[in-house]
Length: 107
Length: 107
Image (cartoon, rainbow over all chains, first blue to last red; front, side, top):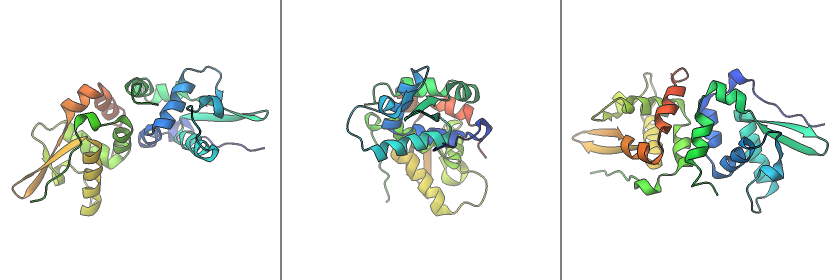
């Protein structure tokens, strides 16, 4: 069974977080996860369109390695959740502001 | 005389801005320029330490291309200013929050 690695919260740093957020596709994923309580599978968290699966996997990996999301296997699906409480505690206001500012830009 | 290209404000987009801010050296440069009214030459805006000149030039180029700073030649110096009013109008609160959150992390 494939397990995903997630950085502990004290290893989450602002530059990596900003870098992970600096992409329209990843911003869309973060926005969808922000509004979800239970987490979403990759397909449901992804922007509409025909992005290759490998491209999407790479975006989820970047988000995971930056500490923004947590991915767990659930049956046949990978369910990702935003680490919202941890991020909001360590970087208060950042997620909310970035999502608000990107509202008009994100596809 | 070398002239620098600066994107017009309507071409400044959030992903490029976040990407430019996603680096400790560039965050230090932005912080120093944020506190300066008249702008600073490269040496004064740069972090302490012996970063190669080419590395610094590259950081300033990234900031310039993202629309964060404006660089003009003044005699023998290149003076850079943060485009603070434009950025604050287009992305209210972003610069201030990112600089605040990065305070403990930036070298």
